[in-house]
Image 1 (tube, rainbow, N blue to C red):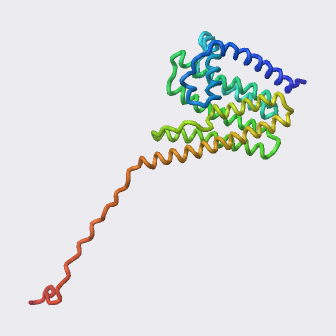
Image 2 (cartoon, helix red, strand yellow; image 1 turned 45 degrees about the horizontal axis):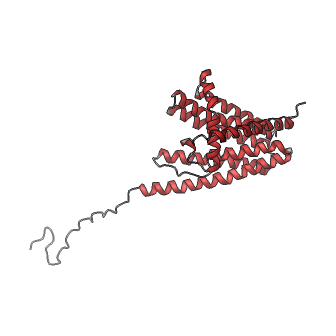
Length: 270
């Protein structure tokens, strides 16, 4: 019988060794920060900078093998489904291991499209929709694996608020309003989940499940705050753009002049 917990721990230690060795070369090379990650805070910006540098050889290998960006996008969705299945069966550590690879594909597809010159609106539309689908699958798997009602509640809340964050942005941009930057966006949500689930490789099953529940609670609260903030800001911008109504005075109905009491009635002789 496979010892899933021991397997996840072994894979995590291999991840850790690979990551540590890459940091040495990263510090030596000191690559520039890509424009696409400069808008994020320090932690996400630093990790994104490392990821873009680390994945450059992989991008070249994928391009040489004839892979395209859409194929990598679907690969990421498939890996997310595998991570969700592991989470549903309570293998939190393995879910974290696979989720790292799934989110890596989310970076690889965009870079591969830029390298191949295939950055098109259709690809961006597909990528955005599959990102939402991957969150539905992932939080659904977490909810299925939670042992108690509170865990399922927080997983459902994390999913709902995450979708609201994305919808507020999409709806605002569809109405011609730039969404305010910052908040608990998808990179932040995925980082919280990845590091929490990876930590499950070093804890007991019960501790790992509790940590996953707490991660869902943090995501639900953070994404909920971000969604409400975006709604308020975008609504305010749209209200200020509305033309100010000018009151119109309706014309008064013409009144017949009052008849003098001395004037003769119609048909009467004066």
